[in-house]
Image 1 (tube, helix red, strand yellow):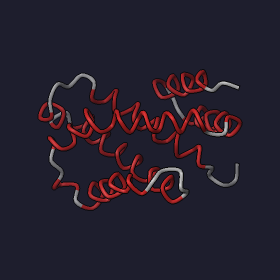
Image 2 (cartoon, helix red, strand yellow):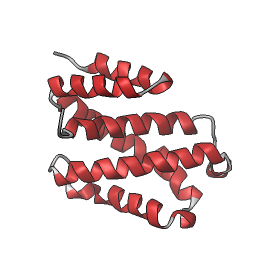
Image 3 (tube, one colour):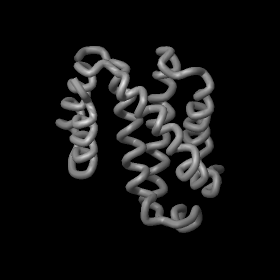
Image 4 (cartoon, one colour):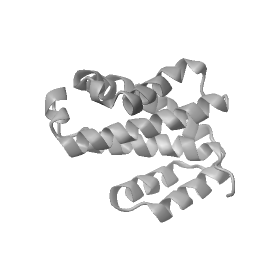
Length: 144
């Protein structure tokens, strides 16, 4: 595939959400999560990926402009990282991200199946361990 198709961005978001869920699952509150430096920083990176991919979906008219808040949050993370409130991040992870995951799952189920298979195959070559397991799970969800 020469041009990055929209299905890549859908999968990017689902992969990022899966990683965030794994990174945060052993934490019970914002402070505990914040002081797990590796998990917190990795989550911030995945939130950036979600924001960038969301921008592509909005610009392609796949998502409405109502989701611009996700793009704006990505910009906040990138440009004002040290001003991020751990309680706000925790709230996003526990309350907003699951809602967005459902929306993106619907996009996934309604996406072009042939392209999704190609995208998942391309991602399979680049990913290892847990992310590869998640890609295999996504492949099972594609019904011909």
